[in-house]
Length: 410
Image (cartoon, rainbow, N blue to C red; front, side, top):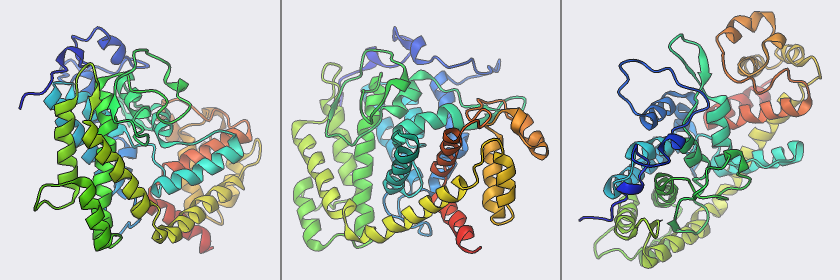
């Protein structure tokens, strides 16, 4: 079937804004034999960064770090990548851009999924007076935290294009808006103060935004079925909502497949990336069903308390190490009690602090880091608190549990 073509507005060399879309903070090293275009390079840079690798041990919804069959954050990212690629390819958009945005869109997620995010948000508001949300943290991570070795083996920031960074911070799919048009203005991405405040700058970003919602709703249902969260009555209710053909089974494939085809059929340059009214209504009802039967299920209450205990105790333990002007000295004293936790936190800080305050025995490690020094000289407590929250938000579920176990076995 031939769908409406977005070729004339795609983020390609023919787009009048193309050179704004591929802008970076600084030029990347360019091999004379380079065959990749800018967005393909971003995809590769994200693929090789440690934050992406950590996604395989981060919770999507259901906490089960030992199960091979429960969706992890990495699997969700791959689902979004697959859905957005299919839509972009069908509409003749730049699928290299959707690949890159999808790859990076959830790098800012905390351990323990949205529950972990809410705990860090509470701590950030209490101690720094600002909110924490994963889309903003995703942009912060790709701009400031994630490092890659360059051709001289020096660690530098990812330095992604504007279009990919924009797609990461603007991907929020929580609002019930199922028709998305790109915004026109190239704003500073620091102007985002709330999740979903602005639409993406590209149609490709809009595709990833709607693909995110399709991917998580479908897969969360499949996990809930496998874990026995849904009764026969619930499944009958869901089947009536989804309105599948006779004989079709409610699972990830049927839900996502129907919606992908609907988006490709109904989207246009004028209307944006959108679902039909009928499918939009179904999507919103599925989301409501998931919140009622899955996300608000009382079986999550123990997990929430567990996640809160781990994150808060880790935060307070590291916070207790702060002493103005003597951060590394205090951390080294605490290392006698928690040797692994403190040593790994010091190794983290060394990469982002001014060289002048790095202890002598860590300077060789710091020599290789040619990135932004976001914690400067750790000159006040707020900078230190930000460092602690950054460190915790980058943890996997498995590593957060490992840290907690050291704290309680002293």
